[in-house]
Length: 170
Image 1 (tube, one colour):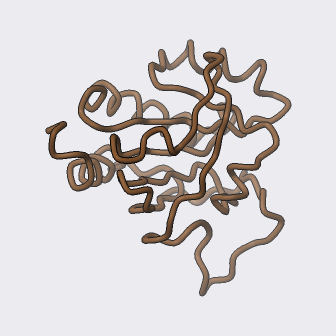
Image 2 (cartoon, rainbow, N blue to C red; image 1 turned 45 degrees about the vertical axis):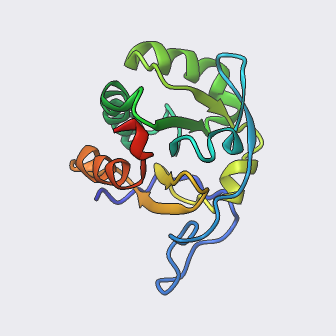
Image 3 (cartoon, one colour; image 1 turned 120 degrees about the vertical axis):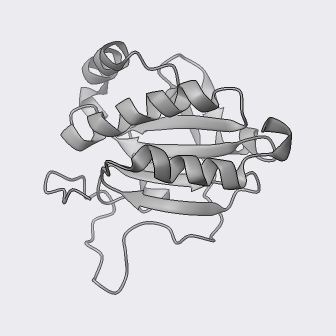
């Protein structure tokens, strides 16, 4: 995994070696409501009982984050109608108005990009380093917390999707 120096310290503290950053696996995922770049409103609760949700906290102005969204678009093509919802939670802040449309166009993204301009969702998910990905199962439980970019990311996420997506979507 790539060590990220250019990170977003959003919660105002650096985790100790004993306490990894982010929410613990097995905890309930915090609820959120965010506007998408597409103008729609997205709530995590809208997917409960229906889909596994992948939350990708990152920025289009972050090099490792750009690699992640490319892998996520490939997964989107594979899992689009198979009980998985990918949501990119954008943390470009004041640069979002310029960075988001460019990123969507450049990477031909077909999954929603949500604007967390006040970093409220990022704080609720204890995001301190980006990219930070979470897999949330159909019951709203965090099943994976993944920091940084990994060349095996598609494999890692596919395993999670296969394990937790609804049986009716297989």
